[in-house]
Image (cartoon, rainbow, N blue to C red; front, side, top):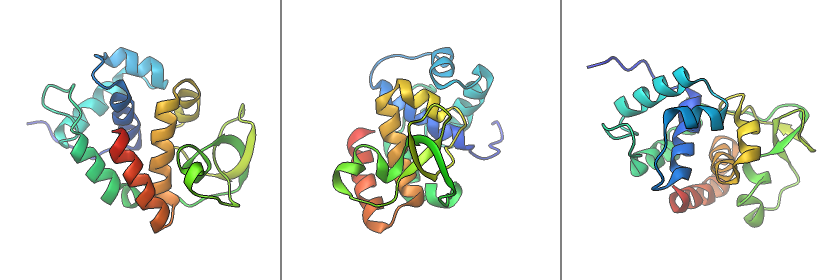
Length: 169
């Protein structure tokens, strides 16, 4: 059996992208193009996720309950985030759908992105390509914003984010 050397942040991005596909078939090269991540990184990520039990042995079927459990109990510890300086970018966490419908906040959180049109506190994305990929995929944007709410939000915000993730994944 191949050795598992630990998950990487972009593994979560790739798994969430797979979840947006639903029952639609997908190829690794398509994931690589849509996420602006190299094909070799996607391939290695798929292998790590399969070994971790987040993808089935066929490397195609997402283990949804395992992913939700990891996000619920592990993401804020494995990939913690503290909001940073005010930067230009695109909204995330509480500042983007669906959480901005439930939670009114004076604070705006953004992923840094030169082409962004909002200023807010910087949240480093799980992979540098996330803002660019999310501009083209609203479902992915919503999922990653919910994950960021788990990373930076308070208990109430985290609970709402988990409920939304359970509905969407």
